[in-house]
Length: 253
Ligand code: SAH
Image (cartoon, rainbow, N blue to C red; front, side, top):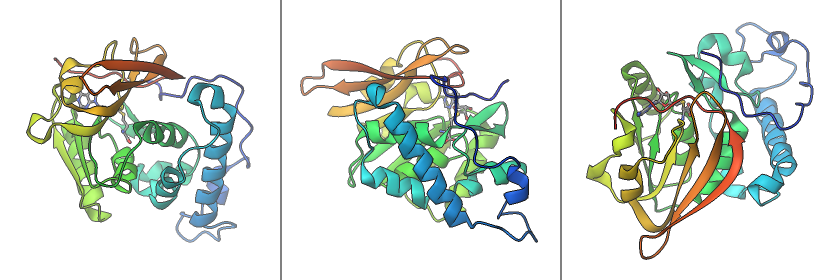
């Protein structure tokens, strides 16, 4: 399965260097010209630039400073396979095995911003994958619940998040389309796999006045990233934002 890439609206600017392996500060024994902190700072600058370039889709020129700060704190290299570590601070999606991907940092940041997370929130994520998005959310809210269909990925993400000290993330294996009724209702729900429609069970588990963010459209093609807001009476408002390309939401529901 090809690596899911953000739907390209414009040609991507050339990378800053030709051979990332040569400049890999994470490579054992190497003499790095730049540190992980430098790479993270560059990544943040690239994400901010891409936000500005896509402001007409996002409806804003800049993301919430707290979201950018959360992105800067999470060690993305701990969420990618060892052979991809040197690419961890590229603003690009990467393969994580089992035909799945860790999303592009710009998309993680944009989706996190769209959720409008607050410190006291309990949020639900569908599609734990590497656990990276869950970690970014965990920097911003009180509790993250995340569901992953693939048993190996669920176990891997749970172990990784625990090792990194994310005590406020609970991962379980299962079909995320059914939500996590035991912990509902949620202050926010983020779906990180594509489906033609937002699963009904998820909307039912969202608190009134809060948001669900999901890629909606046919898997395999590009989808629209949607913000679905539940009004005070339970009525639903939808807003289309970015064109995106996510791996499919699988399983029965
Ligand atoms: N949020 C992830 C990336 C998501 S990739 C990260 O930060 O790394 C999409 C993930 O959704 C994959 O890991 C895939 O296995 C999972 N998935 C697909 N269908 C699912 C379903 N019905 N329930 C839960 N997870 C699902």
